[in-house]
Amino acid sequence: MASSLFIIFFLTILPLSVLSATVLEDLANLTPPPDFTNTITQNCIRNPLLRYCNNTSSSSPMDIVEIFRSTIVASHLCNESKNPNCVESFPKIRIHSRPKTAALYLSFDFFWKYCPLTVVEIDLVNNSLNSEFPTNVLSCAQIRTLDLSYNQLSGFVPVQNLTGLANLTRLNLSYNRFSEDNKISDSEFFKRFNASSFVHSGVLPDAKRYKVKVLVLLIVFPITVILLCFCLGWMCLKRPDYLPRTCRRSHKFTSAMIDAATDEFSDQKLVSKSGGVDIYRGTLRDGTEAKIEVYTEKVSKEKRREFAEECEAVFKLRHKNLVRVLGWCNGRSLRALVTEWTYGESLETWLNSSLACSWRRRLRVVMGVVDGLFYVSEHWPEVTLGLSTSSVLLSDKDQEPLISQFKIGDGNNSSTNIFNFGLFLLEMITNLRPDEAQEDSDRRYLEYIRVHYPDNLERVIDEKMKVEERTLEKVKQGITLGLMCTDKPPLKQPSLTQIYDLVVSLYESSSRHH
Ligand SMILES: *[C@@H]1O[C@H](CO)[C@@H](O)[C@H](O)[C@H]1NC(C)=O
Ligand SMILES: *[C@@H]1O[C@H](CO)[C@@H](O)[C@H](O)[C@H]1NC(C)=O
Ligand SMILES: *[C@@H]1O[C@H](CO)[C@@H](O)[C@H](O)[C@H]1NC(C)=O
Ligand SMILES: *[C@@H]1O[C@H](CO)[C@@H](O)[C@H](O)[C@H]1NC(C)=O
Ligand SMILES: *[C@@H]1O[C@H](CO)[C@@H](O)[C@H](O)[C@H]1NC(C)=O
Ligand SMILES: *[C@@H]1O[C@H](CO)[C@@H](O)[C@H](O)[C@H]1NC(C)=O
Ligand SMILES: *[C@@H]1O[C@H](CO)[C@@H](O)[C@H](O)[C@H]1NC(C)=O
Ligand SMILES: *[C@@H]1O[C@H](CO)[C@@H](O)[C@H](O)[C@H]1NC(C)=O
Image (cartoon, rainbow, N blue to C red; front, side):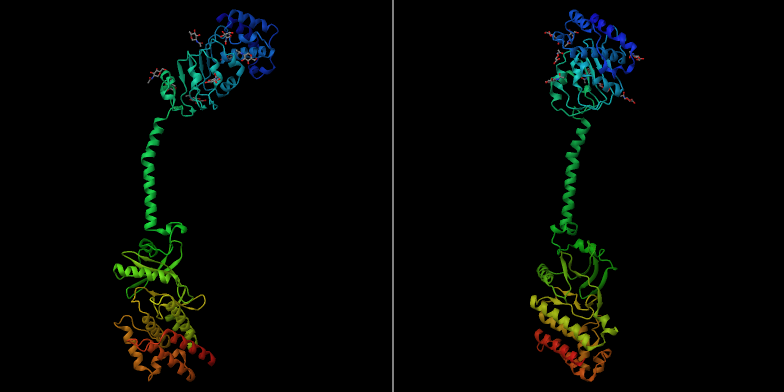
């Protein structure tokens, strides 16, 4: 066998030593010498086991050319692989850390097809090979060593074909990117080539990566789920305003939301504090400003239910003279009503400005308030309105009066609204108001007016109105109406319809004077 190879290499190396190293690139142009057929026939007679011999009988010219070229590649590869004597023997193919050279030789399929029978070792370490497993090297079926470590080979390892290599005793596929093959560790193949053949090859499940996976699965994943649930729970229970608009009922405010909107009930946000109602100017999460009425009185469960019912009712009210209710909070420790923040001055401020001088203007404002009152009494008579010149605002937008305070859970008595309206009407005419600081302020206030009316009119009628003689009668009617409304017990209280009619007629007669 060695002698036959000797002849081949002797034949081919002679011309090669003369030719340049670029001969590999010129392979396509090379033609076999005229007596080449004879040479290989001779070789095959000496050694019929040579890989090309089985084709010489058919001996198509194509095969002769390929065989010739393969002998040339063989001699170059022998030299590249630093075999000690390329003329006599050729035991190893070894190309280390030379990516271009390795890739070039791997591409010569015809060479591998006739792989010399003397080759027992193939070593292509560290050549950046990034294809799939180079199956053409397996044509060298007699090899004992195959080392493909430190490449970027991918895809599946052809276990079947490797198993077929009877003389293969050392295999190294370490440091590659093969696909994981979980059948391999149970197979016979794995008993032949143990884990040290597959270090970081991708073939075996990586212990570290496996550990990481287990860690993720057993610890990180459940923790994430728990955290997510926690977050979701927190949002549902405490801060629904963090949920998307579609998954929450926007009128439900939680204590935590009120807390956040008022900066934890800070003094800067506090607007007023009276009669068990603290009023804050808060900012909701979406940036809108809101008036937040916090009811400080502790109440029973039953009362809380009523509170919720009333809130639901006022939430449905829609009127130009009533502030829009955005929602409410009915927590165990906090009850609050959230309404739109309206930009405008209070009537108290307005009455002290020059704009409020005329009777007619004041009546127009009173008309708006009666309108709102009428609407509420029709839709939900139990709702009590905060009617005072300090709580009714004059909207910047359209100069309409805006009843901006509800007194939820304040007695459920519709005559309270008429009483409150009476006080309001008197405040509008006198520009005087009950002194909240005093005990029993409403009674004292009314007493003051009853004492001076009708004898000391100048002490009762706001002088800024500059009431003329012909209007005086109408203003007096207004005061009488106010006193009737505030009558206690409410025997002489007029009905809302009567009030409405009278205010309208007063307003119309005032226009006739102009
Ligand atoms: C060539 O064919 C013969 C039988 O025809 C076989 O015994 C021998 O193994 C074959 N040689 C190679 C290299 O395949
Ligand atoms: C012989 O040549 C034919 C075609 O030329 C090829 O298909 C076949 O694989 C060759 N046989 C061997 C043993 O190389
Ligand atoms: C054989 O390899 C040596 C270096 O290893 C090189 O100098 C020489 O040119 C090569 N010979 C052929 C014929 O390629
Ligand atoms: C692979 O080759 C590069 C240079 O091409 C070299 O720096 C590196 O040390 C080599 N790695 C191994 C494991 O041989
Ligand atoms: C394996 O090696 C033995 C002894 O060196 C040899 O006889 C046999 O042909 C080899 N097997 C293959 C498939 O090359
Ligand atoms: C590898 O083995 C498969 C069968 O398991 C076969 O079809 C294929 O031709 C073989 N490839 C080589 C290069 O021997
Ligand atoms: C794995 O096989 C190699 C030979 O291929 C041997 O030297 C080594 O001791 C084996 N290791 C184990 C853990 O069996
Ligand atoms: C394969 O190569 C790696 C890296 O050089 C080495 O750690 C491992 O022991 C080798 N395995 C065998 C079976 O030679």
